Amino acid sequence: MSVTPDRSLETHPDIAELRARYDEFGEGPVPQLAEGLMVLAGLYAAASPWIVGFSGQTALTMCNVFAGLAISLLAVGHATTYGRTHGIAFVAPLLGIWLIASPWLVSGVDTTARVLWSNIAVGIVALVLGAGTMSLGMARWEENRHRRPTR
Image (spheres, rainbow, N blue to C red):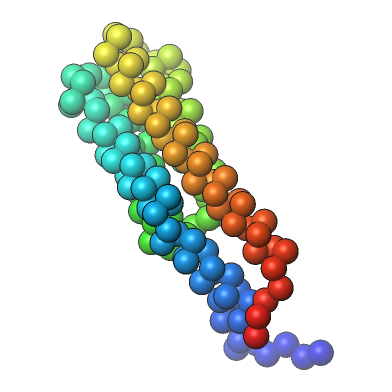
């Protein structure tokens, strides 16, 4: 069997159909709601140093900004091209765990109740929504794995 070197795997009919199914899944109301809330949670995490008032703590501020922006970007990626980004869906729950633990793990942080509650709350939201999105995608993957491609 010869392989045509100019033919990309991206254009293979099975891959294209699988991506179309993932994109169709992402257009449903549950994933859209979860992704929208995850975008908001990420934006809140990024802005929380100024909302809660710990922007003077540079290390934790940068952790929250980067983790929040990463969560928002992941959510936007999942919402727009789930068929291409579902493989990194596990990152959002990990970032949620990081947001929960970061006040204790980042050096030089004055852990006030406001800082703790803000990070714990937004971390739990990111963890739950990220895990939910990941599990929905895994269920969809399992369903597609057993389905024969139609041609």
